[in-house]
Image 1 (tube, helix red, strand yellow):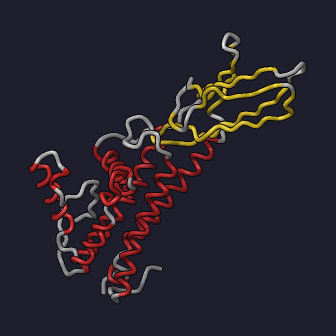
Image 2 (cartoon, helix red, strand yellow; image 1 turned 90 degrees about the vertical axis):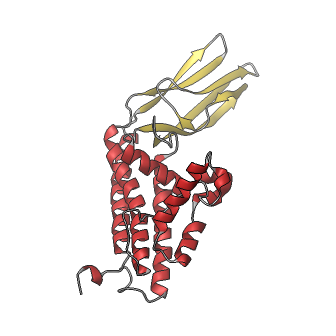
Image 3 (cartoon, rainbow, N blue to C red; image 1 turned 60 degrees about the horizontal axis):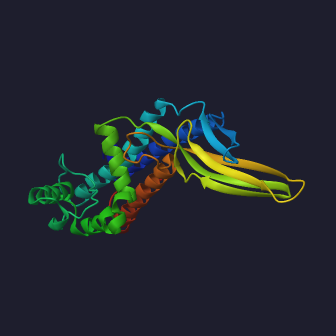
Length: 285
């Protein structure tokens, strides 16, 4: 028995997912350190002619581009774990994997030609599907079909596997992933109000921001002879996919965590199927 035979067939998938966790832990530490260094400041400017205060973001430091290859490693290992799974499913079916063997990810059904702009495009999509799943047992292919993003309907483009595929293709074939900053929300705490009224005339929604972005416009007015009010404004920030990314503006941690969890669920769904059929060496440890 070879050393490889001593491990579960999906042990390679598990190794990929362990690497995902390793890289994500490094990113989390880097994010916490960056955000803890106060890279952003909320500047409060009074505009007497409009009788309001404008709150805008002063960016002291941008997220470093050195995070990009670590993000790429997380994405690559997630996508690679699925392709390793497809490879093992062919072997399980006593087939021979090929260079085209892969876990298919389709936002549009390859079985509905009407969804494509031309007959050639539809034919290419179906051909790619057939090449990727060739040699996989029909029962496993049926489950793979149920997991496809196109089943999400109008939300297929933002389904987890679609986002993972877009990020993987971008990172491998196009450009590195620039990170940006995203506004998570703004809260206000009013203390000791007296003879005064406070209101918000504008509040920026959650999303990407840059130096000079206006977060809010607020105003006060006296309602009595001795107006007083203390207002504490708290703005929350996070790291997002930046300029050029197919997921620009999406929270980076949320996407990576969701992708990793989804891939893990898929791998272990198939692992349970293999184990129930008494296939292969002992289960994963």
